[in-house]
Length: 356
Image (cartoon, rainbow, N blue to C red; front, side, top):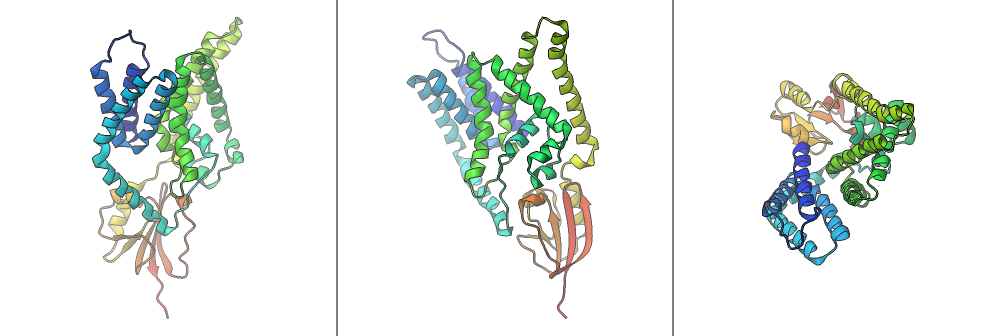
């Protein structure tokens, strides 16, 4: 989902820039092909994720502040109107999905909110989550001490921070500054603000992923800036040109190695967890999945009923993303018969305790 979303959003941004940002001769009309593809990519991106609305907010703000005339704003509004009218049939499905999502609150869903989500998201943008604290650690213990207890994390944040600021400095006097600043800030910060205001929506870095291209572009400008404004000293020239690039390559390979070979950073193995339940379940068993039940249901092809609370004589409890809900207790109701663990997934097979 997220790869197509980035692709379609990039298509939207590319044709948006071609239509509204490139200078044109007086009286020359816009290319109809550009308008068509801008609307098409925008619509496909919107169908992929409703958070594409944030991309449209960035585009509107850029047109408003950079161009600022009524004719251009009207043209942009007409295109957006066509896009949203084409999206309207999917709105009913999207609203139903939101209603289904709300069911997690029946089992004690715990909404997360912390200012430390911002460095966490920047961490994901920089080198992913396979270096420094694991994903579970980041959710269970959101503290500055946790971040700083990993030297590789502190080094990466310092490196990308310097390159990011260097990139902004490099484009500070060009139109690119407003363009890439809005392109990064609007999709990046708005999901965080929504998570602070909403009672049910937690911050998820995946909702900000369309800000990644602008982040990486600013980083590239930062590297370019260091190369241009190098000192006359051969030693300082070499340091500014090659040290940042060397660190980027080394940290990237370190993160990639962890991603594939360090179990601490493995993705949740929901597929094999579902297969394990299918092979060992019995008639009449029930499944209780406090979080990510839709993801588990995607792989699960067994016959047991998925319930929204702990009930039934024989119960499977599938625990994933345990930071999203209060710790569960069943000692007085169920006896544990079997425990199995997969990366990111804990499976308990329980049997109801019969009264004497």
